[in-house]
Image: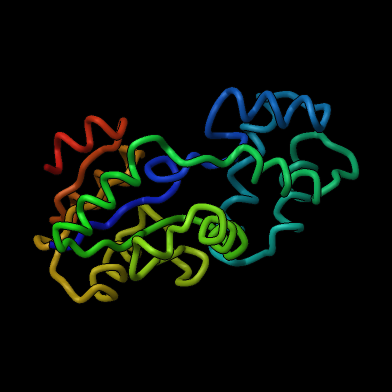
Length: 196
């Protein structure tokens, strides 16, 4: 059995302003804008960034400018994102348990090259997952069926030989539509009870 994990929202709490009120408020205070403007401006720049169509400085510039920030300091934004990232409590223990039992683990994530590199360095995700399939590297993103189909080919299994874990309902539903057993992540304790 292959276990296919989303990283952000399951293993790592990302520092994106649109993922929590705290992150939004922190970015808003730092850059002199509002949480609402930050949330509204997120999707267009994020769509390009997660597909590898721009680099991190361009992403932060476009995103923060779209949020009403004049001449944003992209280095401060990149640093703040990293400061706000954290491991989600209890999930690494689940990964260790699965690996100890002989399970194969892969990751399927919507992310950028820069953030993926940071997570590998900061949180050691490369130890747990092989392969790590990232939207920025393949040009598809969840919930697109093509991204899941690419992942199945990459790990060399059929849909019924995979368990997919993600924190977003639309991603879980898209995987289920392809015949992939999927679990909506809420917290580590609940996930542990569903997997073991």
